[in-house]
Image (cartoon, rainbow, N blue to C red; front, side):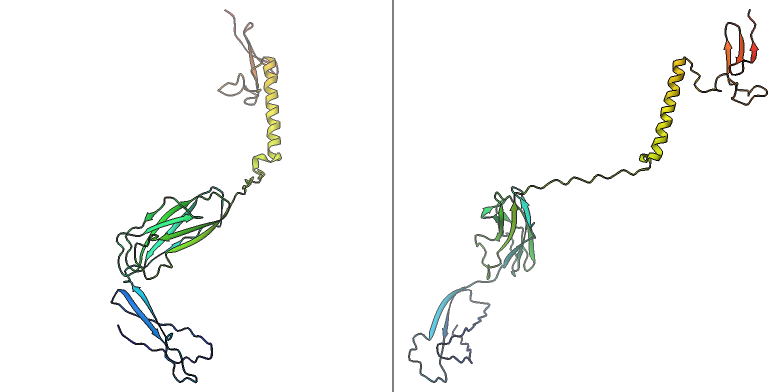
Length: 271
């Protein structure tokens, strides 16, 4: 556009070099442009005898900034086992001023091999703050460092002013170590019922009860507890405590007597 810009003030000694930054801003005229840079020696001690190398020209293509894609990988596990699948979450962004309605393609590789489910496309990415999250699964088949790389727009379909942020990487250490199962510690049962002071008396009573039961069964007597047979519902006999008498009835003689004292309680006459 035949515009001139000047940068002054460099004092160059013999065989000395300096780096000069040139910034050119333009919002129109997208396409190919020529840029020429020329140096002119002022206030010199020795004259410049060769002016042919004082000028340099270059061509460049000016892109219109519609989209600016970028991505990042969420934190990965530090170590996984061999043949274990690692889940990779990729966040894709569009920082450009235009809406990317058709979305952008994203691919993830592990040690150069494409991860499942392969090439994926994001949803529509809004301008400036457009974001989408994609999920991939990688399964290492060898031990050692496993490099995972995610890339957005791998085929350069969308023009961007800067594509250095179109990829992100992460490393997972793959090991074939065997994980030893942890045996839970044995916890002593200190419950009340397990204390010897409780179960020893209970066991003793159970043994005594079983012995009494066997004793009376061997005698052929089903009157296991004294004072329960012949008890009258109306009360006890005169001069005796309730429940203390054991009455027996002799069918042949018709006599009812106290088994403990032999006292005749009653007699039934035969017909």
